[in-house]
Amino acid sequence: MSRIDYSKWDKFECSSSGGSDESNNSDEESDSRHHTSGNHGPPTVTRLEYPTCVSLGPSGVQLAKAPTKASASPFNPTAPPAPQKQSEGNTGGMKASETFCRSSSPHENAVRAHLDEERIDAADDDEDLLYESLARNGGREGAQHWWSQTEDCAIVSFHIPWDTTAKDVTEFHLHEIKDEESKQYRAQLDVTIQVSFPHADPAVYHSGTAGAISPPAVMHICKQFRYPIKLSEELVEGCWQLHRMSQRRVRLLVIEVFKEPIGQGLTLWWDRCFVSDTASVIDTQSIPDRVQRTAATGMCAREKAEQFRKVWDEAHEEFRRRRRERKAEQ
Image (cartoon, helix red, strand yellow):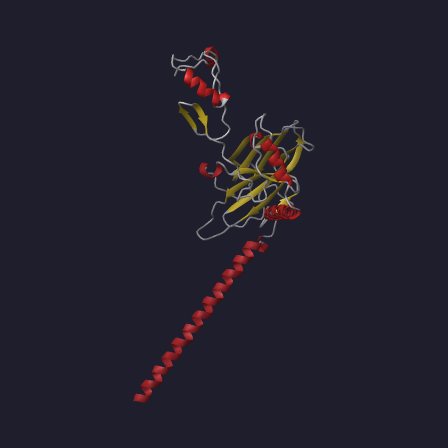
């Protein structure tokens, strides 16, 4: 495709045929922005701020009237009216809009303020629930990370600098290595974050302990998972994301991994997330979800035993009844 040189547009000239006097007179009555007076001159370009119907006819170029904008959205009833762009020569509409905004009654303002407070409270409640779920069925390893688990997956949330963005995560590598001490293969997590400003505590996370001070604006996380996890590419890709809790001013790098099953119908509950964890080690017998599942399973087993005993008693009673009937016939 050939490239268009738009710089030559300034040299375009407008000319009219011999019978254009009448059309020129009619054009002057239309919007002067869409017509160039005289026989020669550069074209006029009009920038449209919204979808517009343009008509070309004997009277020249005509634009449909701008559509009116709704003062409130049904999806956000408390939102203020959307500001409309006004031309320099049209100040009447702007003044009318300002008058409309000021004319809200005290009752409407009070209702709007009450709805805003309810929305803020709801957002705070959601953040509280999220914060509590960071260590559900798991624990917290100081100021470094939280971890939680379900029957088939584990979620670890690292505390990172507040202004960290996704592009600052320059390295994310989840792979399998051989532990030299235990001679076992473990999944290792390597993350490098380029912080856009010097961090107050740029400790290097290595095997769960704070090592030497890292260079400014660099944060490195190196961890080994205590138990096996699935490392297939489709599960590892996209397994991390960033979360922000504004109320607590906490920025989190959240990573979700899937546990490697140990057997059909068997669940492995972790007592820790990483090999180096010490403060977040938990008692697997007191895990809330496990306790609930055990209680539900135990209740189901008792119900089945009671039902079996009831059917057994009914069968024995039926056997005795038929035996008595046969003796009576004899």
